[in-house]
Image 1 (cartoon, rainbow, N blue to C red):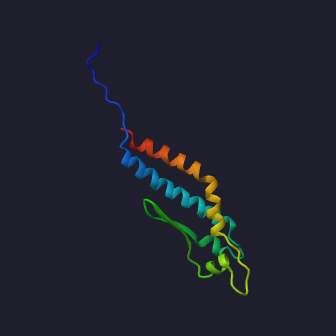
Image 2 (cartoon, rainbow, N blue to C red):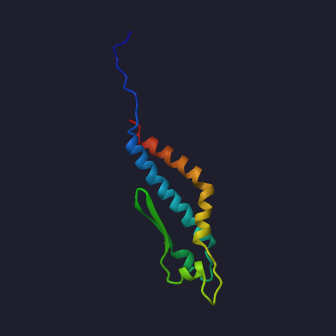
Image 3 (spheres, rainbow, N blue to C red):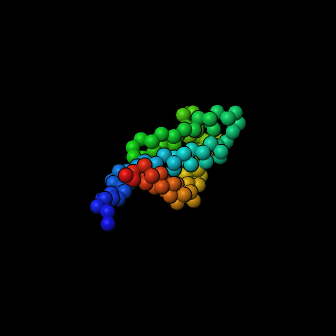
Length: 114
């Protein structure tokens, strides 16, 4: 019989959920960014190339376009029909959420197990 004490690997749940949340937010924003870039109207490509993302907090990210006419493309004007690209991109995320969450929790678990 061995007197060797084995130490089981464990996960700090607070750190795990914080990391998983941040990874999920970043991955979700990346999915929306990609969807928006592929569905944005592309006359010159400027609008598509202007779409970006940034994580603001562990639970908040934004996907944006920094060209001034993006809002008019998204919502239209009284002279121009709307050609939405951000809202459909966000709607497309719904089908990917399970995959995004599974990926993030797996990565967070791997980082946090000791």
